[in-house]
Image (cartoon, rainbow, N blue to C red; front, top):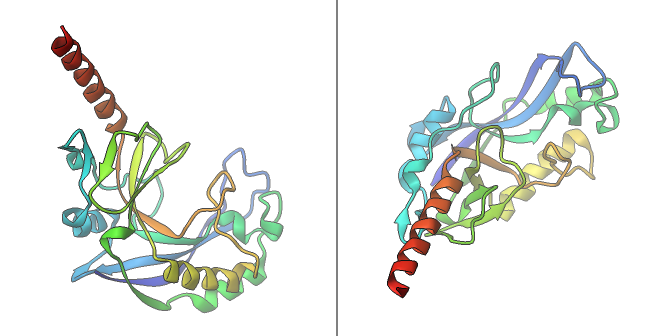
Length: 226
């Protein structure tokens, strides 16, 4: 399936959270904004969810399909509702990639020169990735992969990502390196390397469903053994 995106540089009011040790007037975010999936124009995260929902792999536990547990992404307050692939987060625009420092305006200038570039790419069923914090030993996907994570965001225990192909990983990393330097690797909030991806669905009910099925199976086995 063809996907079209456009590089955007977002300029936002400086982050005010207590853990941001250096407050600045503006912070920046570099991303590939998803414009179209297949024939569907994409303006919001819900649009991306609806465009891809029928192509999700089956999420199964004991042959029971659990896809109905998933819904469109819920975003934090005051976050722009767009489906996007992060190319650089706001700490990456700080000097030495450190939130104790000021913004590196050389990085901002380079990012501005990339703003508006359009990139087309293909996604396949193998690019779907279920990322969960709960025990996924009994979970199977009809296609794609499963990963474990310590956190997948507030009030979620699983998300469904599109994890881009190795070729697109290299292509997007080349764009990031233009802005942030030759040694740049995309990090999550724990400063752990993460692949380029976009999230299309979430749930906070997968762990409960898995636990309930395990209990029912144990009860059934107990009856059969008697």
